[in-house]
Image (cartoon, rainbow, N blue to C red; front, side, top):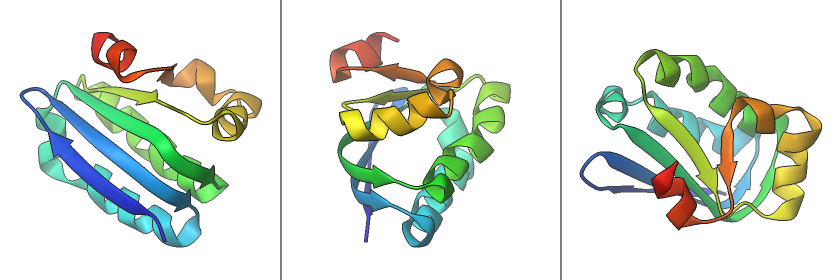
Length: 110
């Protein structure tokens, strides 16, 4: 099971993903990203340091919210991504669609 921890600050919401993001845990993430008040933030940072696996269902959750975030001018930034997880984004060309940076410092600056 995956755990999603939300850490709000002034204009940024950081989501810590812990575990495997598959079809069953994608619902948890989808619920978090679907909250109306998430669009009040300027930036949503996704900390992937403890994300050990992502399935197509997990990717689908991010893709399904991407347009909504863009329309609301909310920047979605991924950071601390493990190489095997990044490779999935890269293979599907999602690294071109989404902002993926190495560290929290760079994510905050993005």
